[in-house]
Image (tube, rainbow, N blue to C red; front, side):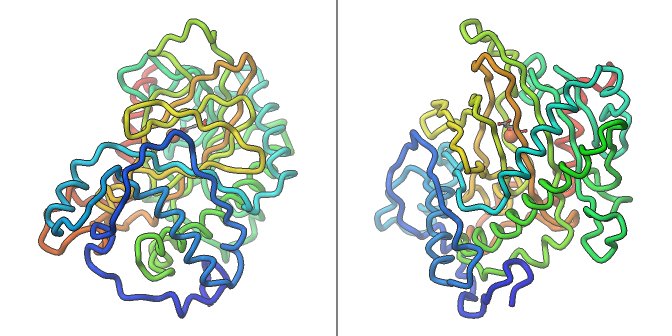
Length: 378
Ligand SMILES: O=C(O)CCC(=O)C(=O)O
Ligand SMILES: [Fe+2]
């Protein structure tokens, strides 16, 4: 039994085949909508259903806009390396994050962001040694060419639901920029419970997705298991005030164009809409909110690990809805010390990797420092 899925994995274990993903034939495709994948069967012991799901995920993640024909491996690699950015977002239904949990967390989030500024800035992220707490409006500048993001946020990371639960995952607080103590607002007794309830449900979803990503990469289903025992998993509550829909200043939008830093992100968004994803033709595609789904998108750690076979797709938010917008991204990474060396199925043994090998944790740490540098001295 796998600890990750609680299901049998034995007959899906395969020997990774170097360069397998590069050799796969692909069809030309420029996405203009986000694929929806029903992952309900990921929670079952049905191995062929999981294999099928993994294929759907691979299609969403690896469609590079080329038909490879009979090209020789080295040519395929060159084409992949030069491939334009593609769409690597998909929406997941059939997940097991309960609706009540989502509602409770959004209520808690609304209450938190309605607190007076003084109460929120008590928890200012710059006061935290490990990037936890509150970010004010314009406190981030996700696209460095912009003038600050039109959202406020609250960042937290792993913490057991029950403080006496010492048997569960205990990230190494001394080392990681992403782990360590959370900060919680005073005077909102429901907040911590609600947020942690959601966090743990989303974490379970992430742990269910990792084996599917492994299969999608033609790896044994448990390939990520020992690399994600102490996964970095930062979650954010975000609040976007409405912006004038007819006069959008491209330099100041909800969240500027960016890629995420970790392996993948699980994003819940409310019905206001405004999330956009860049497709292969550099066109911004609306990731229209679909009730009952969460968006999953790939991040830089996966791009580095797969030598860009999985791409980290630029996305942004412009809240033109006329309403307040709330969302909850959870960024799912690996253990701090995991080296992001190209996965064998994504490169040929003698090829030069696109990215310098770094540890997953150091990579995210450097990116977080750059994001918050903008407001560090304010
Ligand atoms: O709020 C959203 O829909 C997207 C947030 C996002 O892209 C991020 O926090 O990295
Ligand atoms: Fe993002």
